[in-house]
Length: 105
Image 1: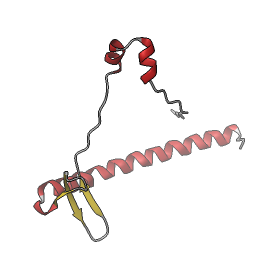
Image 2 (image 1 turned 60 degrees about the vertical axis):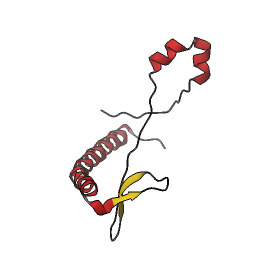
Image 3 (image 1 turned 30 degrees about the vertical axis):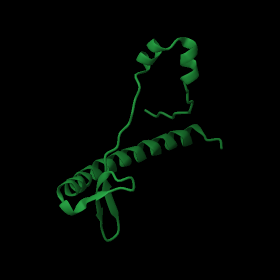
Image 4 (image 1 turned 180 degrees about the horizontal axis):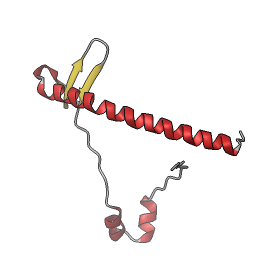
């Protein structure tokens, strides 16, 4: 699909407007999220366990279900790994992802 310069300018303006709306929506979601988390933490009847037996907080409403659980993420210090491995070993464990990124400013 080939666009004219004017169409491209309009498209970029449209993208920026939707990004602004998305940001505004995310801001509007923050307060209800905080209220839901507070409810789950403070309400004794919300105590439950997940399928693996880990403690979680759960509320089953009329339409939706809310759960609050611990989650963890492990990260590795790339600079420290490079110190421990020589270049050949490092290349064996290194994975690189390449993807396109559109930036409009």
